[in-house]
Length: 324
Image (tube, rainbow, N blue to C red; front, side, top):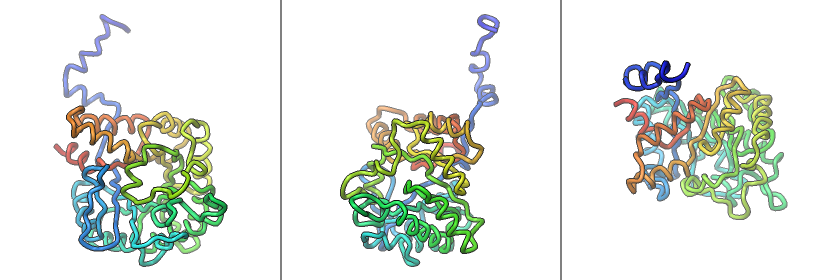
């Protein structure tokens, strides 16, 4: 049926009908809010390239976590900035590490908020790479044990879910085995299954103080040119025991998100990364775009492409806009 019998504007012209036939919906329950916990007290340092996002000491992390919970956002994703770094990222798996102490504080003072932790070494190593360095590159297999120890320490501190982001081959299986051995078989793993070596991570590296001191991460993160490889990476992580798979970054890889949605039945997450956030914030501050409209349109794009979960620095603003 075509014009004039079919007129799409009959429905579009009425706001109530537009809402009734909307094919994609966005809810506060879809959101995860990333946070950066820093060693010390009295710290609330805005990230220069990420307006509105801060490195914060634990007491301020707890205060913002309460705000996040009260907005209805169900979960936070924690990254840590330790007191000191070394070649093997010792603070990452220390019982008294910055993330372990942050988890305990949130679980004690902010009931009802789920705590997800990033499992990686880059924030904790003095060289800024995601594992143990051997012959000028990250040694995959020797790094696996440290990642498994890190994940276990997070769960022992009270984490509700762990999210390995390092992109070492076999890390999901190593973490699953370690958690199961210690009786944590009910703890889910959200794998950064498809993580590209992207220029969109720049502001995050300022926030997490994780810039590599030499080289780059292309030997372990994915080539942006590769599409079919994403299916292999996701399938491998699922086989190893991932409960949720993730695509990172978000907007430049909507085709990948849709490929994974078409191929797999597992819950699917997308990370709306720092560079995407900063570009929107920068343009909005200059009056070039309508921030609320652009952000909500971006979130709908993620949902339309197949995402169940959206990790985004915009989460608090989105919750407020949805609650209007």
